[in-house]
Structures are given as structure tokens and as C-alpha cells.
Amino acid sequence: MTRLPYGSPTTPLPDEVDVAVVGGGIMGLATAYHLARTSYLRITVVEGAYLAAGASGRNGGGVRMQWSDPNNVRLMMESLRICRGLTQELGINLWFRRGGYLFLARTPAQADQLERNAAMHRELGADTRLLSPTAARAIVPELDVTGVVLASYNPHDAVVFPWPFLWGYAARATAMGVAIRTHTKVTRIEPETATYRLHLSDGTALRTDTVILAMGAYGHDLNRGLGIDLPNRPHRHEILSTAPLKPLFDPLVVDLSTGLYASQSLRGEVVAGVTLGAPDLDAPPEPIDTTSSLGFLERIGAALVRVFPRLGPVSVLRQWAGPYDFSPDGDPIVGPSPGHPKVIQMCGFTGHGFMMAPAVSRLVARFVAHGIGDPLLDRWSPGRFAGKPPARPREVMIIG
Ligand SMILES: Cc1cc2nc3c(=O)[nH]c(=O)nc-3n(C[C@H](O)[C@H](O)[C@H](O)COP(=O)(O)OP(=O)(O)OC[C@H]3O[C@@H](n4cnc5c(N)ncnc54)[C@H](O)[C@@H]3O)c2cc1C
Image (cartoon, rainbow, N blue to C red; front, side, top):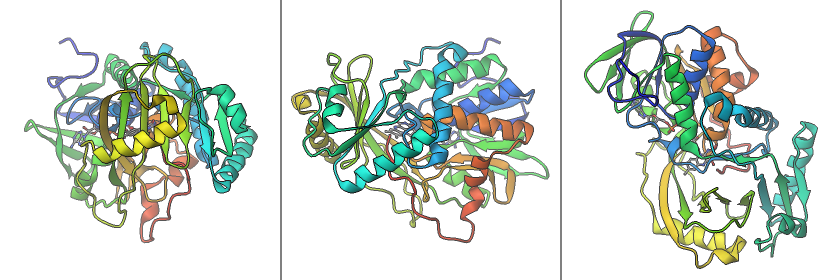
């Protein structure tokens, strides 16, 4: 039977596999691809809707190495290195555009943070430069730098178009024998003696040795069914794109005071988002909300025009939302689950799972296929929350 390159609702599934990946977002697909590349394991991906249905099909595509935490800087240097060769590796145009990221600081505390970050980045070999407001304008002449005290710029940061990223991983995984079934939910995971039985919404079941839960913000119900209680919480994050404009700016611009981020796509649309609030991390998870709000439009309109006054009269073409998957200490939640070492979690990526996926999926595939660990996986262990209140985020920049 011919297999569709990106998976389909009719992909035949075997009764038994070695690894079942739940969730066909960037994490699940990239991990399935690396597992297939580096092992002879029998692998299936089960996606409840279509491949870009979750946060992976709704994000801003920002990929940066400018972080406050050295582990994240190293990880993202590796992710960006992988991204540079990924169009060739996956055989699909990712619209990978290296225009850099430009952070704008308006307060002494923000400027201080950028200075400390840039010094640490340089020690790690990342080419982050501190710029005066005037120098920032030399890179983005459209900027209004009134009130800006310092900027930081890394020309190697980038933006991608998320969908081909997913399709590329899916197509290559399929070509290597991974069965990708879409529009089929995993409704329950039943532990057996040494395996797990995944009950599917089409009434069938699938037995597997290892389960990878790559469900982003959607994983609570399946986890609870296994007695696993994780502290990540979904939070609606809204974003928009404008009518196409002539090329106005290259870097993705971040205003640290408002949380605004804005980039211009290769087709000319300005794609911009802003973080509004945070979930109550002490409350039970709320249902996922992907509605759009007028409040967001008002807030982002003001934030965008403050930075780019010329965008005042521009029409908004599309506004949408997706789930951020907040982790209480700002670190992702990745690795074997407490009490279920063969249930591997990949969640809690807040607003930056897309950019981390190229590197993280390799680490997880290596661990699952060959048992090779990594200090990052130790640090991100789902078991780290057991018995203690989670620390608050170390990263100051939780943005796209
Ligand atoms: C608006 C927005 C902007 C963002 N901007 C950026 C950015 O610029 N850069 C960046 O790096 N990150 C960004 N992010 C974050 C990033 O998109 C996510 O961290 C990342 O996509 C998470 O990928 P995932 O595969 O873990 O989850 P998802 O993409 O959410 O995939 C989970 C999948 O699981 C499926 N699923 C759910 N329940 C079931 C079930 N029972 N059975 C089977 N399948 C199921 C869902 O349908 C979904 O497809 C943004 C997020 C949003 C919402």
C-alpha cells in the first residue's frame, strides 16, 4: 500500500510496536525521525487531529541562541547548527531565514540582564553583540528607539516557517518505515506486565514497549490515567499576521518591556505576538483555549506601533492562538516518568519548544534507542518536582 508522505487517517497500524509516539507535533515527529534514523525499532506516531494541529502549527517560528541560561544557549547553538543543514537533510524548504534577533531594553535591570547574557554568550562562542539605540537603528531603520537604553543582537538567530518543518520530519520518518496515523486519539494507556496497551479512538488497540508522550500542553488526561501528575499548565498565547508589506526589517525584534516579538516573513507579513499573563501553576490545568481576543489586538497594536510607528495603518490579516505549555521552573519536562520508566515525557516547553526540537529530539531518540543519557535530560527529569514546590522560572525571557 502506498503511504502518504505526511501520515493519514488510514495508515495501517501494526498490533505491536517497540515505540509508540503520542502526538504528531514537532517533538513527536522529530523524535520518530531520529529513532528511525538511528535504530531498527518499530515505531508508530499516533496523532489525534492533523499534524500541525497543536502549538507546532501555530507558533511564530523564532529560533534563537540568545538566552539567560548557559544550558539553553548551548542547546540552541546546536539546534541552529542542525537547522542550517536541515533543508538538505529533510529535502524540504523550511524557509529558514537568518535575520538575527534584536532585543530592546528600556530599564536598567533589562540592560543589565542583556549585558550579563552577552558576556556569557561570548564565553560560549555565541556572537551576541550589545548595541546602542543608534546602532540598533542602523540595523532596523524603521525602529523608534525612544526610551530604549540598550539592545542586543545576534545575527545567527533565525525564523522558520513551522509547517514544512513538521512535514519534512514526517515525510522522512515515513520513508524510513514509521507509521504515522492522524485523526486518531489515544484515549487510554493501560499498563500491562512489561508493555503498554494504547486504546485508540477508532476502537483498536496498540501494544508497545515504550511510550513517548509528545503531547505538549495536551498530556494531562493520559498522564493522570497512569497516576502521573506533572506541574506543567496550558496557557493561551495569541499571535497575528498583517497584510504583506515591502521588506521593512530583517531581525526578529523583541521589546522586553511589553513582551512583544515581531518578525517579517519572506512573503512580507509582519508576524507578531505578545505574552498576556501566565497560568495559575498551583491550580488544576484549565481546558485548552485557542480563541482570539480583542484585548490581545488592543495590547499588541499599542506595543507594535511603539516600536514600529509606521505599522499604525497596516491591516491585520489573521489572528490566532495556541497553547503555551508552561513549566513551573522554566525548564522543559523530558525523560522517563516517575513510576513508569518506559513512559517518556516531552512537554513543558513553554514558548520555545519549536526551536529546541531539532536538538532535543536527538537527545531523546539516543536515550530511547540506545540508553545514552545526557546532563540536560537529568536536569529536565520529570521526577525533579517530586515532593518539593517547583522553583519559579530562571529564564527572564519567556517569549516566542
Ligand atoms: C502562538 C505561539 C507562538 C509560539 N512561538 C514560538 C516560537 O517562535 N519559537 C518556538 O520555539 N516556540 C514557539 N512556541 C512554542 C512551540 O510552538 C511549542 O513549544 C512546540 O510546538 C511544542 O511542540 P509539541 O510537539 O511538544 O506539542 P504540539 O505541537 O502541541 O503537539 C501535540 C500534539 O498532540 C496531539 N494530541 C493531543 N491529544 C492527543 C491524544 N489523546 N492522542 C493523540 N494525539 C494527541 C495534538 O493534536 C497535537 O498535534 C509558540 C507557541 C504558540 C502557541
